[in-house]
Amino acid sequence: MSERIEKVNQLLKKELGELIIKNITFKSGIFVTIEKIDTSVDLRYTNVFISIFPVTEADYVLKTLAHEMYALQGDLNRRLHMKPLPRIRFIQTDIEEKADELERLIREDV
Picture: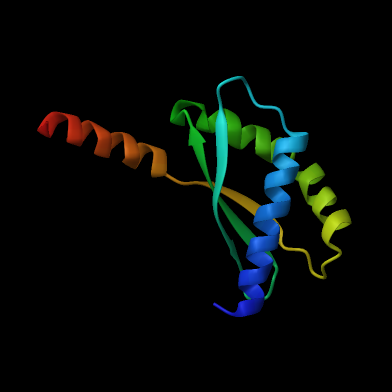
């Protein structure tokens, strides 16, 4: 990965994190974490990998983010002044599920 793409990924992670915290209200007890940003070389698309806790609320969170996508994209345009500004796609990671499974296996062995 080029140094430029890495810098874009870091910048998008920071800005998107701030925008989500500031502008999107989820139900109480839901935590959304940006795990990784992966931007295409041509800067057209960005995959935003998020973890959601509890995992049972994943559909709700993804629908909420999809509903707010236009506003998030517009806020990013105003903040970053990039040409082109990558289109965002949110993708749920299964890190929480893997962590739960690992914890369960550890408890069984103890």
